[in-house]
Length: 321
Image (cartoon, rainbow, N blue to C red):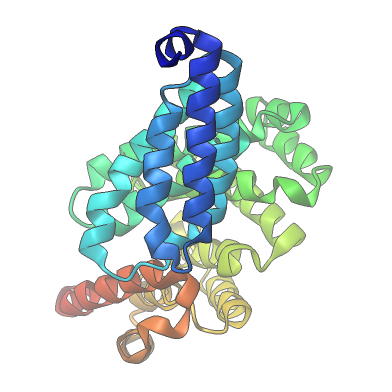
């Protein structure tokens, strides 16, 4: 009977799917979010064994659960554990995406994941490699945006076309637009002397202004943080505007209650350095140093990265001032 059961493709698919759902249910029932990660990873691996329509259903379902369980990863404060775990999880998401190439949840998680990996663990040591990851993040984000026909046309058109498309876009487009702009903008930040890269800066700015208008609090005031860095990291000759930069950074700090420490790091790294404001630099770095890692429990990982970056930035102070 068992042999006959396993010989049937449909029966095999049904059996595997039931096992995936059983493991996912057990994972979600685990009280600790961090304890869910191995079970969810195992469920993701099992879903790869499915075929055809059943496989796609399972992939879409797993994508939604991974999205909900992503907090279990961002709560992690051990940087080495996160550094080792994130690449494998990103590749696993890419395998899942092969079975559901238009899944907006998987695309958004990949866009966010590659940008986060590049920012947290790559760009300070290997900028060239980080550029490649930021472009990958941008491309995954664009695939989310292109599911809206008007935004797709805007991306392919002029800056004015993109602004017009964004003007008519609803609030639920914010995540896709934000992570697209984040990947693009971060790539540009590593290429400020490249005219071709700088040519795309107005598009990244337009997208982040859309996010700020529709949901200014999204990702801890991320649009304000981005725009503050945009205006504060360049000389006035290259388009820097230090008053606007300060206003954006202060808005970001109000939105996140000074709990998202990456805000202070980039405030110091960009505006304080460009204006040679040593007092501002010292104050912001000291604030990051003294803050508890638990000031933002749902994103300890970002704050742990911010603390590491603050230490590195402080060490460079003699050459920056």
